[in-house]
Image (cartoon, one colour):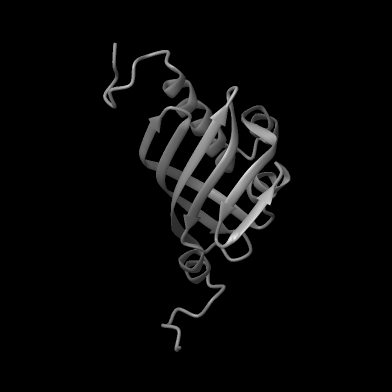
Amino acid sequence: MADRSGIEAGTEQERNIEVVRRYLRTFVTKDLAELAEVVAEDVEIYGSGTAVRGRRYPEAAVSSPGLTVLDQQILEIFAAEDRVVVSMAQTYRRDATGATTVQSACKMYRLAGGRIVQFWGEQDTYGLLRGLGLLPDEPIAF
């Protein structure tokens, strides 16, 4: 039987969505053991003009000192074959000041064998830095 998204229960697509949800949840829980269960050691990561390889990159993002994810809202999640696409918003707190802000992001994941092996995406880093008081809250003059 299909759920609200039209995906049959117990399908590879449904399992892939759950893997991505578990990965995203690690940004709130900071559970690196769970992250290791769902992200391949040699994961390929593309975004913000860079391409890197290795689970150490998402591990560093999850465990960023001084920055805490207070809340996470998955706005849309869609699976097709071995891909899962997510649009989301995360509420961050800069621990040193208590400042909070929301960062939006759109990511696409490719999975194999129950793990994330590639992902692409963009997030509003400029808005995050402005909202946390790390950049001036004024327009950039070009």
